[in-house]
Amino acid sequence: MPELDVADVTRIATEVAHEHALPLNVMGAVSGGGDSNYVEILLTVSGCASAPCHLTIGVFRNVSAQHLSTEIETQLRRHLDDHRATDRRPSA
Ligand SMILES: [Zn+2]
Image 1 (cartoon, rainbow, N blue to C red):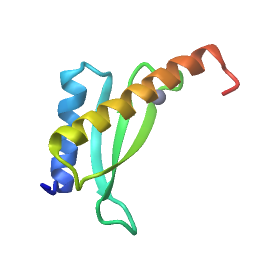
Image 2: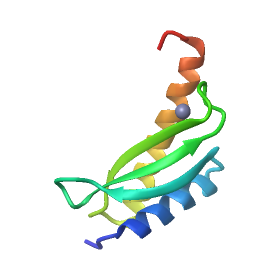
Image 3: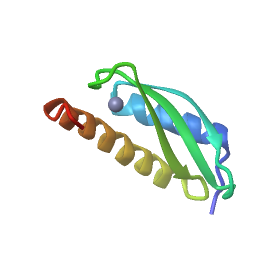
């Protein structure tokens, strides 16, 4: 299995955002604590209920680039959906 480094994770996240025209900026990525394969990606999201919205998503980098790309897209879309839902539920 190809192992991606933190720079690869950052690049892939940027590509996913660009490719799907998602309203966010990738600020960077950092390795997690205990598990060296765990990477957190830091992003800012435009158009969320609470702007500026800062988002951290956790991924594992010991997967293929394709898998990582899909995982990042899934998590980003979930966040964007959540924050649209929050718009209708101000208490959340
Ligand atoms: Zn948000």
